Image 1: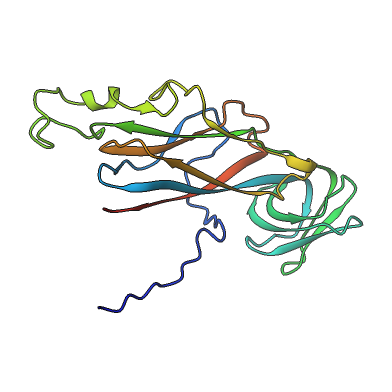
Image 2: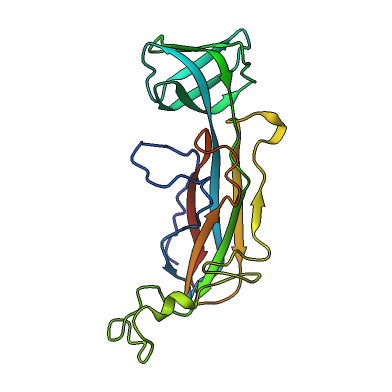
Length: 229
């Protein structure tokens, strides 16, 4: 019998924002993943980490460094900077609760932000799986799905539980933001399993209510896992 080696894998330990992202998840728009073939897959799941990002808005002295920890005084709250602007810094991984009267200081740069600090949380996150017999790139002669016309496959996407395409499903997974009143502290973990067989699948996420854009939003990382026969 051949030896089988199973390598350990850490699934989605952290979301990293590198500053080149173009999609902001809190803008009422449906954000759709890459379409992937799923016809012969079993035990299909989408693993999602959804990180709430909040802004501290005030007067900045110095220049914060993206990735540096910050500490608020007198609250003692701490977090990590993932973005900066002229009058704000974006924080995630927050421990504790920042207060409006805090002076927040970067532990590496020494920069500070204070004044009338305000914080916000993004709108609730909706997630769902859509299925289709054809990929959106279906063209006559390319995918051999004749006689379907060019682009016709975009009309076949349907959400599990109803809806799909431009129509929000009846039963999406809804992740509530701002739990416990701690903006920026929360990393949500979501697993979306499905058993329906379909040649193509994709993940769709949306915040139907832009609660605090651009002062708060979601950073999303998703991974699809499944077994083959």
